[in-house]
Structure formats: C-alpha cells, structure tokens
Image (cartoon, rainbow over all chains, first blue to last red; front, side, top):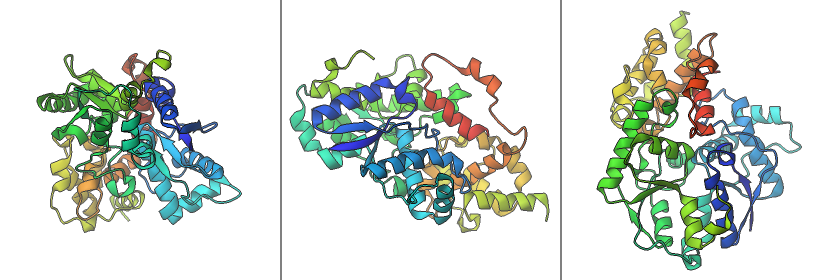
Length: 265
Length: 129
C-alpha cells in the first residue's frame, strides 16, 4: 500500500527522528510513504478566520496532489495534521472557502475535499491494525511504563479531527500495548503544553509542562511519547528532572527491530 | 456607524461566530489553561463582543495569552467557539499597520539551538501579518 506523505518543515530539521523512524517502521509494516513533491509549510496553526484563504492554500495544494495520485494523505506532525485536516473539512463543507480557494488554484478540476487525511497513528489503527503491529514486534518493550501525551491538536475540535474521543482517547494507549509496553493513564495527557506561547513566555509554558510532567510521574510513567515537535520541545524545556520524551515513531522502530537500520539522527 | 460597532461586526464576520448564542455557562473559562493570565476571561470575551465593547477587547492582553488549544471550542455546549472570537479580535489588531505583536527584530534573541521551526511559523501566524 502506498500513501502520499506530507512531512512538514520541522520533520526536515529539528524533528528528523519523528520522520526517519516512521519511514523505517512503515517499510517494516509493509506500507510506503511517498513524499509529496514540492510540498509547502502548512503554517503551523490553522488560520481560524473565515476570510483567510491564501494561508490555507499550501494545505490545498498537498491535498490536491494526493487526490491526483488517488492516494490517501498521511501526516505525522500533530500541527500539520490539524491544519491539513481542518482545511480539508473547509474545502468539503464551506462553500465560500472552497470557491475562493479554487479561484486561486485554477486546477483542471476543482478540489472539494476528496482526499482522506490520515495521521500515521490512524494508519496503524485503521489500515494496518494494532494486532498486526503486535505480531510484527520483534523487541517488545516489556516492562516499560509509558505515558501517552496527546496534547491538543490531534484531538480538538473532535467533530472535525475525528481522531479519537477528545476527552478520553485511547489510540496511543492501544499503540503502547501493541509494542508490548504498559500504558500509564494520567489526567494531564490531553492538556495543552503552551504551544507557541513558549517563544515569548517560557515561564507560562514551563508551568503548564511542569503540571503535565508531575501528573505523568505521579501516575508512575517512566517516559512520555508524543507526535508533536513543539510539545516535545516545551516538555523538555520545562524541568531539569522531567521524564524523557520520545517521538512515538522512535519506540515503534525500536520494537519492530528497525531502529538500528536508521542512520543516527 | 460608530467604529466600535463596525469592529464588532468585523469580529463577528471574521470569526463566523454569533456571540448571542452564549448561555453564559462559563465552561470555556473553567477549561481555559490560560485563564489565570487573562484580564478578560473567555466567557467575558463573548459578552464584550455581544455588547460591542471593542475598545477594551483590542487592548486586552488576553489576545496574546490564548494558546489556540481549542479546549473552549470543544467544550462549549452552544457552539459559540470563544477561541474563534479571540482569534478574530487578534486579526483585527494585527491587520492594522503597526499592530504586530511579534516583531522580526525580536526573533534572534528568542532563538535557542533546540527550538523547532514549527514554533516560529506558528507564532508568526498568530502574532503578526
């Protein structure tokens, strides 16, 4: 199975680990991520204004590229996923945005939200299946107590993201179980890390991440996993004695026995 | 039409939100992770727009404390989406000349070696035009 793949700006630079371990894991699981040619940055945050059109076009271009290849579009970064999924919803359901975006795009055939957008975790759950992932695990992470840190962008707004139950998600816990480890459920797993506030107000994101860390530690986690480079950065910056934070793809590659194949990142 | 009235209309238009749907349950403020940092709280924000009290809103530091975490949007039982209203007020400010909250000159000293590109592009989108 081949998917169109949108890596996003950070996965080419500070978050290379999120990308390379996903590619190696995909190969081991029997599917291929075909990177979209000439993709453009999604902008990091979804442009909320209903009159914002130009800021949504990079997503539309990626979505249309996947449509022309008749492939589903896979994302890894929580922010890219959030932006592209919401723009796709606009293109499907908001006539004004669809019309004006297509006026800019001048495509042979207008884009109207035809592409299916899948986060890598959704591919594992809905296409590969966590049972199959479990069968392919060579080095189960037995004994590890892992806290899933969801953050905001994968879950909310639930009506559009349709990723999981936004108040009580379980996809990452099921993922952790598939790797042979033990998920730790803690109250702050879908609380905000502070996001972009950490550029100008480190103390505010520091306090928020401190709460997340304390919560996860208090419930017995040894480490945290995330899909978001900004969450990882904020969590790591928050405390000296915090838990280690990994991209979920790194643990997947380790469990599948393909981590060593990947050149050091 | 007074300029406040015009701006209120603009905020309603950009956000696509009808603040009159609010039933003042306060869930948005209860769930907001930036509540303590805000001078005008999310539920008050909705009333300010409904009452066209815009001068205070565009001066509010809440515009720069909202994290776009969508907790208020998710949990609003009336689909008022306070986060969208706050963003629209932010747009009204940054779309004006000199309204940028983040200046390009500030960036170099805010950088550190681990800082992800995602943080810069996100802040640029939210804080400036």
